[in-house]
Length: 354
Image 1 (tube, rainbow, N blue to C red):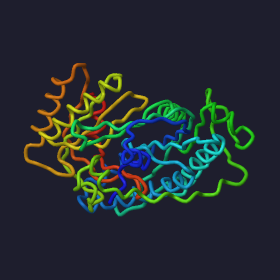
Image 2: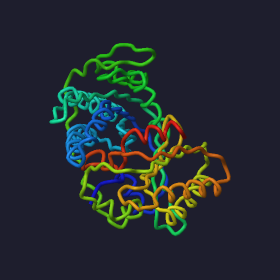
Image 3: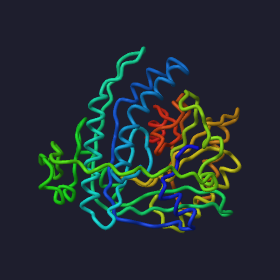
């Protein structure tokens, strides 16, 4: 069974807890190079998709391992970027040091794997990384009958690392001032426009922690994703997919819960897949797909009916972008945490349109 939901969400869901918060160090990683890689490999059918899947595993596997071995966990993926959180617990200094160590190991790995040679060409891959401290709030939004659920993370521990990453160039790690102040005697940095560029990590690195075993509750996981996704064998393929990107205004918990209940009911009627509610520096977004992993002849009609009726059912205005493109459909991430998504220019265009 695939690990598609963070363990903190599954554990609390099984315990009947659907909301919480904690102090954390946030880490945001934005990887560059996959757009060109995907466009090229898309011309080579299923073999191109398999080559892309292998490269993605090589790129995302060791960074995921570094995060979990340093006490963090991955919240989710957004295109070729991802966010991780390191709970501060009783000793914030330890969490900060471990988060910075994970960031350093990620860039070391990507520097050593900066060029990927395939039978279809040579492709560079690089990343920008940002770190900051903050608060992380999480929640589970359930359907009226309690059989369906989606999770989210939000707060400054999600937004501030992305703001730091925006200051980075390829291959760099940018620290927010609060990170630097806590570790100023343990790291080497250069000032960078109100932030700090990490240039060295002297001294001994923290000992890797045992990685917690993956959650195995089928009952809990099925609330978040359909069976055919949890046991999907095919890691990557190219498919025509309808991408629906929804941008929501700021909503309180009650309004968001009501909106999601309407979404679940329409999804029962018209299908479509979505992975989670994504709160970030661009607000609250929901990305849905038709045509992957399961396709029907009338997927375009289904998607358009869905978004039209969702708009009519909401008592507030929202925007959405809809595109129909050939996309890479499959899993992003590693065995520790992965996400099913469609990747390609159709997603980017839908994001611009919403």
